Length: 193
View 1 (cartoon, rainbow, N blue to C red):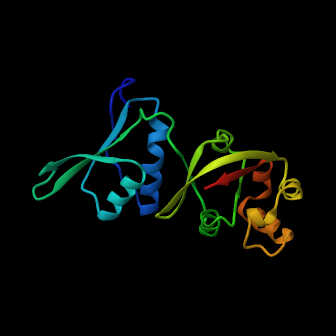
View 2 (view 1 turned 60 degrees about the horizontal axis):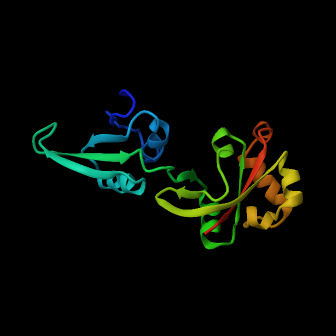
View 3 (view 1 turned 45 degrees about the horizontal axis):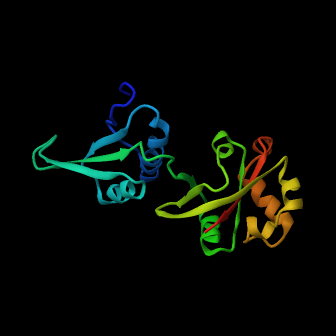
């Protein structure tokens, strides 16, 4: 990275899969925010990469015919790091994403990783599943010691709408998060569209 305040060139920006490329494009701005005023990258992108860059607020800044090889057009894509607080992004499994976007699910449960602990009520949150995304607002956050404590106080139907009972909801949550993860604390993120 350059001295503070300078643009940061990401080169090369490569990934073994589309999912990994998406994670890089989504998270690099947050990870490098303190080091410069913008990020930029030179690519000869595939159409799916262009869609991914646009989804994550990157903009095309220039085209350079023959930039790195004859008969190719290199594109410069940039991302400003000076827009204030960026919208936080969270990957979410399809059934839970669909539940929140349809309004059937209003509570998202996560364990207390440091990134989850930084979430705040009132903050917009972009939920992502593959190429689908939607923005919600965090209404409130409640913290419990265990999944059992949480399910004693919260509506399991709003957490795992596809479950047929509280017991099944607990089983599904523990399938996602093993016991040692539960020890980090259980965060209930109440969202609204």
